[in-house]
Amino acid sequence: MDSTSIVPCTSPAVGKTMKNTCLLILCGFLPLISVIYAYAHETEPGQHITGIAVHGLKRTKPQIAEVPLQQFMGQRADTVDLNAVHAAVLDTGILEPLAVEIQDAPDGNGKILSVKVHEKWSIFPLPLFFITSGEINGGLFFIDSNALGLNDKLFVGGMYSTGGWMLIGGYAHSPGPGFPGWNVSTALAQSERRNTDQQERDIRRFGLAALSASAGLSYPFTQALQVNPQISYRQMRLKDSASPLAPPESDVRAVGLGANAALRKSRWDGFLLSEERLSLDYTFMFGQGTPAFHELRLQAGYQKPLLPGFRVNLRAGLLYAPEAPALFESPPQVAQVEILPGTFTARRYAGASAGLEKHIFTIKAGSLSALMAYQAVFSEGPILGGGFDHGVAGAVVFYLSKLAIPAMALSMAYNVPAKQPQFSFSLGMSL
Image 1: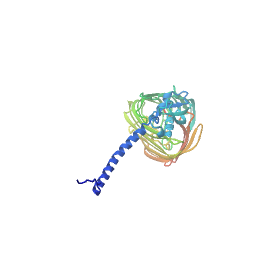
Image 2 (image 1 turned 90 degrees about the vertical axis):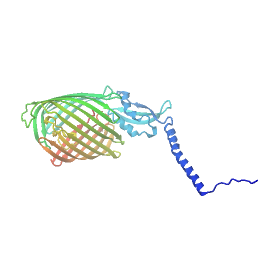
Image 3 (image 1 turned 135 degrees about the vertical axis):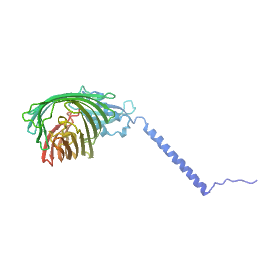
């Protein structure tokens, strides 16, 4: 009987085929193995943020402090950006973060994002006194930046100057989860109105009594996007003036219907709170004594740290209201520039500012920084026509950590074509 022996195949072709088959099988299993590992790693119990704790609250309702931190729920504890937590707390405007920690949950199920905060002073009287263009201005305001502990804003006060007086008041209720916010305000004023050119020479001068009121809603669609429908009423009555110059033709009563959409993100670099923002405003005005007209505003800002405490500041502003009458022309702040006087008005603007800001020092009351920028702006109005201005602007800014006001600044600017310097003091308030 013949014996049969089994000999391994040593054919090169067969060996190559087996190698390719093994390689294909291995390549097919690798993605599956990585998915299984990632799933097991991601669902590993006890590694995700399952709760939020805010310590140090006295007047503020807990939900007001916790809502901005909900964005971190469900994140893996080792991926949470503590600077982003710091920025979210600062964005409330009424809380100063003192410490941010991630702790084990008491029941062992997950992690707790624990934040210790200091409540800023939110109730205070605010006296004001300053001199601009030879005019003395003084006033007193009462402000509550955290009304009812809900981060609502209440303000009431008045101003008196050699050119007239003003009374103003309002209330803004902050939106909550699933609920819109709302705001109402009113103002009554009487003044000798001055509109000037770039060199602060009068181009209009007339007496004016004005009443205004507004109401609106605010809908936060996402953490960054908010939409605000608004309705307003303005009544402006011309009064006798000792030396009138090119006054408007008639009194005005007008209703405005509009909306604002704002997109904003912020970041904290350990020294400065930077932001990226974009806002679009549209208003349709109609009434008695004025033709109906449309007004469109676009504002943008971009701040990015180049190094901790040293950032680039970019701003731009656009106004388009070609049919706006004299009483509805706008000041240069809408163009995001400081090189034009506050008494300057126009119905079209396109402005930009590019600069750098450097943190100087921090104390318990807040932090001081200095900024320098170059600005350019195109403007157009019925009397002056079109004009282009540019120049340098600088400011010393103090960001307040104890008071629920974002910042105060002492600014200086120089308009090169007009050869005109500008000085101003500003006290910022987010409403």
